[in-house]
Image (cartoon, rainbow, N blue to C red; front, side, top):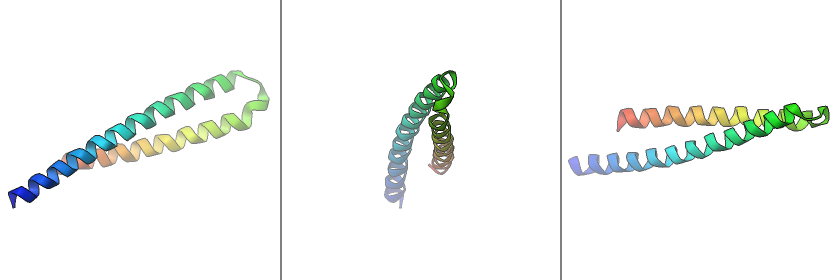
Length: 79
């Protein structure tokens, strides 16, 4: 019925807003990791393992952001 469709649309809109907030947080965290990685690149060679870890974390965050973006796009299309 139309009432059920309206409830589903509201739930999808709420989920979309939640995903947007998560994506924004991940983008901010990714930016901070990139900043730290840039500082480490300029630092001593002894920081290389930490630099590699931060770069790997950044790649993981980028993948999560892309997955969230795809999920958000799906919600926008279906909503």
